[in-house]
Image (cartoon, rainbow, N blue to C red; front, side):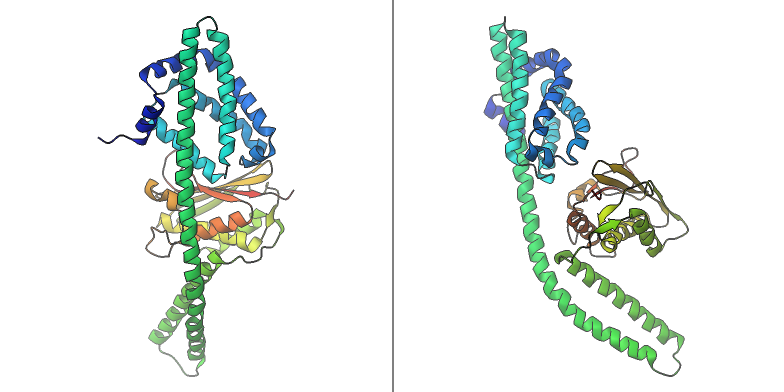
Length: 384
């Protein structure tokens, strides 16, 4: 069997079973200090403006991240250092790409941990120089492995992101040309349809039905063209205080719902205003609702839960449909990516683009309690 990348990295730094035993010994010595080290670590980050702003939500997220760092340290020194460990560490590198964290901050952060652990090693093993050297060498190897994994996945995801951007650029050029060309024949069809409907004389039921059907399909085609063009152009944004409760209600009223679909919302009335364009934010809710309703088929529930956070609002939109398979989650917000029989996969990319232009974000987050149904987390900055 071919050597995995993690096995190659361990071989390259000389990470051995002896190092694993040394780290387990160090874990017993340092685990009572994880909380203090996390405090030191984030105190250092918050002193640096560039590193502080790279954190999603700024200081509001630090409490959660301190707990995450303690779990990270526990896994660092306790293992097991297998492929599952490698996969878990890869997610950290991908997260750094998502929040656009510059790579040099990773080295600085790792050095803080290296110093803190080495001080504990010095104080505990000072009467055991041989053990001190072994443990310090094992620590150095595992921290080097951590950096190598993060840098590899950072580079891997950054290259994938660049490739997506290049595809989007090509997509935009093609769409701009085709979209404008399609407007002309659609306009002719609409005009001819208007004339035919307005001609005097009675029309039989079948003719009237087909004229209405043509009108419906032209409207669908026009919306597809509009969505395509919206993906590539920067329409001027309004910047005004917006109450999301009003925007949500407007979107819900525009989506055809069967009696077996229940839509509810919690926490919207208590939210502070966000700064943005109400029409474009309405489009965000409209697209997400339409996706949820189509995914659920004959019936189900859609629930929006909202809460205020320091500097932002967070919205969780959940439905009781089948959810999104793990295989397509990473491409969920790419144009033309769809699993539906109808539509061409522009709804979610447009949602992402609108939110990012508002300084917000959207991620897919599976429902932790059951795994069934889709769940999207949205963030928008509030009026300061």
